[in-house]
Image (cartoon, helix red, strand yellow):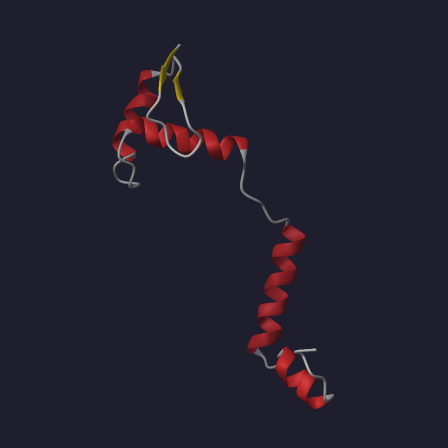
Length: 94
């Protein structure tokens, strides 16, 4: 393992060795520039960050509820908070 002191936001960079199938490396090399990465290393670091901090995945129930809400809005079955506040004489700034 070797170190590099020119690392980004997290400070010191540490070089690691990892073995991957040649086909995976070929795919990385084909994709990293297309996805806007400056280097293979940058793309792999980003993938590792995603692995450590995965993005939130919505449940099917939540996705269905959002779709229903969108349909209700498109059919005019909902009202904005401002409209409701005005109807009931509520000051939202208080």
